[in-house]
Image (cartoon, helix red, strand yellow):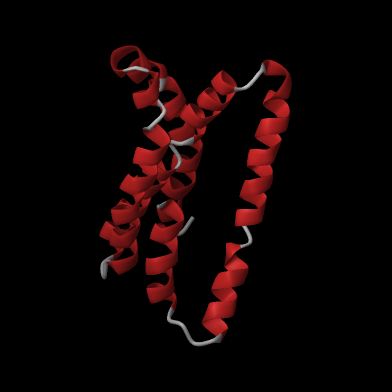
Amino acid sequence: ARRGDAWHTPLFSPPLSSPLLSSALHPRPSRVFGREDAERTPSLGSLLCIPLWLGALQSRAFAPALGCLLLAYLAGECWFGPFTSALQGALPQDVWGSAQGLVNALQIVSNGSPLLIGALMRRGVPLRSMLTVLIPTSHA
């Protein structure tokens, strides 16, 4: 492997590890602060993501940009465990699969955002400016 090939490895780890970490940590806040506070974890992670993504997009140096991106992935992906737990706590067990299927369908639809980005780029919108608006907006 070339020297530059290993830089991308951390980018794949946070989306896999962050939901596991948030699932492991989720029951702890609910015992200390109450269920409502524990269910705020996805919102807090998403809001924390905004300045981290802006740091990644606006950084002029490679290492700080990747550091911000790593932290953004860790913060942004912490929603899955608490969300699933809250969803299961709010719904009867016989509809858990359907509810999770609807969440996954929404994720599939949202994965169409590259089409929007491509259309805006064809109209001459600079990529950095566009992502600086679209990414924080999607997390808010």
